[in-house]
Image (cartoon, rainbow, N blue to C red; front, side, top):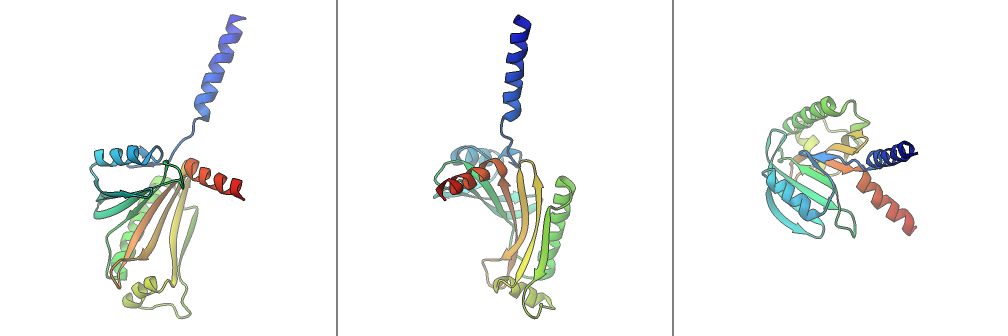
Length: 193
């Protein structure tokens, strides 16, 4: 009887450990916890903390071999639980340098996470741009869809192009969505409906 009880207790403890939520990581840090906890972890990783406001912490530093990146850490709505990290790489003035960076990161992500789960890379203008200048311009007129996403059991990593802050520039954006905490947002939305 004692052995049976010990077996039940052991299986219960083991089962509880197996049910523990796994989180996507960013720089080796699980994307979860409070914004303050995650901010402290990013500072320890060597990033410069720029500001924290309204559930968003902004940092700067080098990332994936690229200098002068900025990134934002975002919490769940109305909760102090981190669920998303967005990296913005430096701006590019030419399409060729922008797409080279995008393709390099896409290749590295594929090597780490496997084949993309989804991919779309098209210009949506009636007359697709044919040269460097007009391709960068298409980013500012939002005449494009350009992303590749990778899925893991812990979440989604999405690589995309976006317009830059300066006129006639573009930048690469990389977003990490933690599945467990993002699902909490969806559940709350469903509960509201």
